[in-house]
Image 1: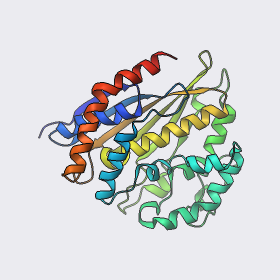
Image 2: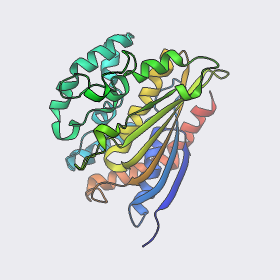
Image 3: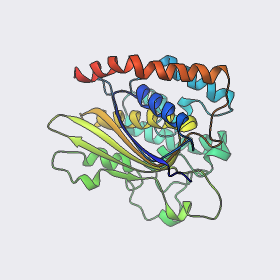
Image 4: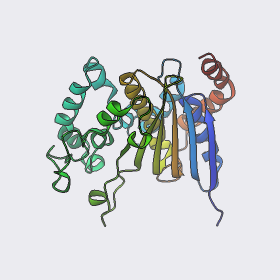
Length: 285
């Protein structure tokens, strides 16, 4: 059996990052790359740089395959719409999200039965089904469950870098005999550069499905990075995402047909032509 190939790329945009890795993985005989590392630059405004044609084509393929759209995946990591409604009040965001958590779980009980990523980042000891503290984590201090708030408050010049990390995986809840697909995202860490006034985000996945989840995951992580940067007077600059095992999809490949052909063509166009424009944007900072 052929050993899975390693993948490592530095990309100027979310669009080129997904497009190149999708084409590379589509050519891989086992539809699997391990380990997988991608470093994705943000725009001059600290926001993800996307190609809407590519995104819409991927969403069309996901819908045809019965999968969640990109934005649904992204908001499990950071609820961008709720943040806009909070009008800059992050305490309001935290409160609204945790109060709504049981409702979010009930909307997709099979997928969200073990919780959502943002909930574990801002309410680590919260039971996703009823919003009550988990029995084994009731001793957490009030802010101890809100890892993002702790990081925002700790993110200052000369801060201990080890303090700027957050965990998603919980052995008590997650090391069970039952087969479950959550959490694939295990851990995140923020890296500020106060000389340049920038913030990067490192993320680790045990496994990730490129076609079904990766675009939405990276979008959500970059939005989370931009949020934390905005609260620490920094500019979000880059997402570095390491994945132990990157698979194309759960059934090895997307459904063939016109939609997939269009997506593949747009991915090729994206890295051949639009990458140059994205590089110019990044270089003009």
